[in-house]
Length: 420
Image (cartoon, rainbow, N blue to C red; front, side, top):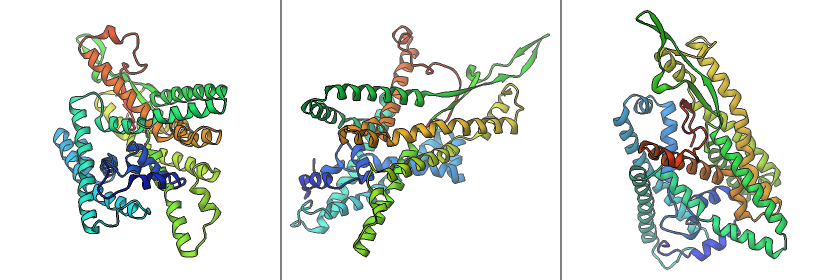
């Protein structure tokens, strides 16, 4: 359903001529195209994602949120959920106002005969209701379904445009009599998906050993908690967050270009190239930002001191490494080393859509070759498969999943860094 007083045809026409406004394209992808259609779900679940990221970052810096996340258990989690919901409503009102301002800036997108006050008040309520309903639906899916409901909603929004883009690419290649190129393109897409799965699943295992104790007249090893015998350092601990942060930063050149055009009447070639997602300066800067944000976000979510203290409490240690500060330094150095290949891979995945689009792939289909879309799709699918597998194993249906078991899913260990 379209918002009252909004002409979605004018929005579609403006979206086709907008150029490389990557932030708006990202939002439109996450909402399944609702953003460019003026739908009541135009903001989708994005305000909730923004609120969750803010609360998560506050948990690293503000003692109150640290206490809620780490020490107060279930009551702290419920309090964080309440804060996230209220913050979602506030962000929805802010983004809703910005979205309505964006609609009014497009010629023909808003019916001028409608009273401005009525237009703003009614549509702000409708947009907020749409976002809150999406948030409620995601939480219900989490409570009653399989996997994370919010992630599933995002995946559905992303994958909604995949069939149309895929069919358009097939028809385009057939009309140009380039069947061999189409086969090569699909084979490369398969390889990219497999490589993404391997990196998302990739871990560096650190063996741990429990101290021995006297039982009667014999020495026995104390079992570690839940039978854990190693620590898993994830190769891609930051997940998709570095791409989201980098894309938000890359939106700044567009704002600077618009300000320069309004003030001086001209735009610099550099700013113009930074607004073109296929240009070399854009992709070089994008790649560098992703590598930087990968290290920053990994440093925030991976706390070597916490895991060193955990091992000490469990009376366990890493063979050849002294407990305490040496264990902390060892985990920190390993995390730093394995983050580099993970950061480089995420950077390559992020700029891959521009590379394949330059090679002749349709822009709508090219975005699925990498970037946020591919990482979210792979991550959500793997998480859902893990949930299904755990339910089957819990109900003694081991025979149904034994042959198709996901590598690493059933292994024991402490996993460090579970990025989004």
